[in-house]
Length: 68
Image 1 (cartoon, rainbow, N blue to C red):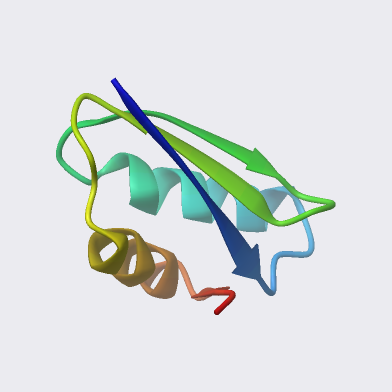
Image 2 (image 1 turned 90 degrees about the vertical axis):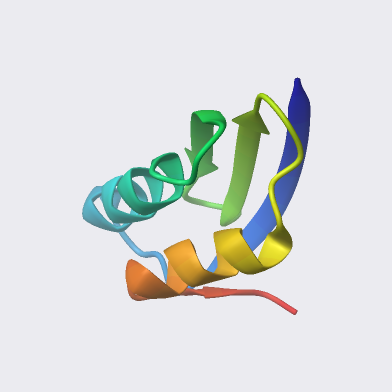
């Protein structure tokens, strides 16, 4: 198991959380996505390490951005 935490900017509501969760969940190997709306923290649990670029692409597909 591997866990990584990212910070996503631009989320303001539960729909934002659902969009990010849905997109990141589609990355191969991801088993759980936990989004904390107030802080923007997104914890990704996966069977093996996930490339940051894959997470960034999924977050951008949802319409948001990773904090740098």
